[in-house]
Image 1 (cartoon, one colour):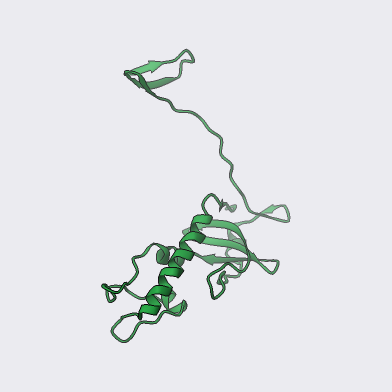
Image 2: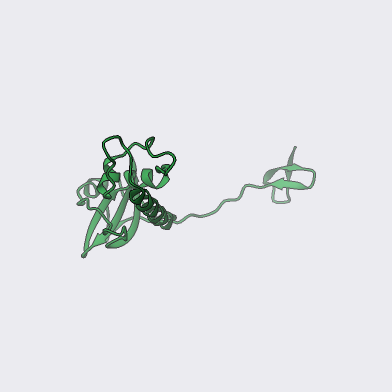
Length: 156
């Protein structure tokens, strides 16, 4: 059943319940350098750099992330813009990790190896590696959660 309020805006009503559609404004954060919008061509030229130290704490100031096919972290290191493709970080943060009972089924990736976790010849990880990977996963998940609401847009 379609009902109308005094404003004339139609909405769906069912007994005492009503669904309304309201217009809201949103804020879009656009990256600018020296007052000029950052273009995709310039964005692609920004040097890529691993943004974390050995304990997986960010070593610079995070500005936000840009979605350009995949998520890219945009951050500042020693006064210069840097970027980092977050695909492997996002995958690691959301993947099931090996554990004491299911140690083999995990496909080790170059990213996991870059964190220092290297399986033995049959693909099994040590219990120390499993514990460290769980900590790393929690840290990176928290980092990604802190990026919520920090999407940035670049000019085409």
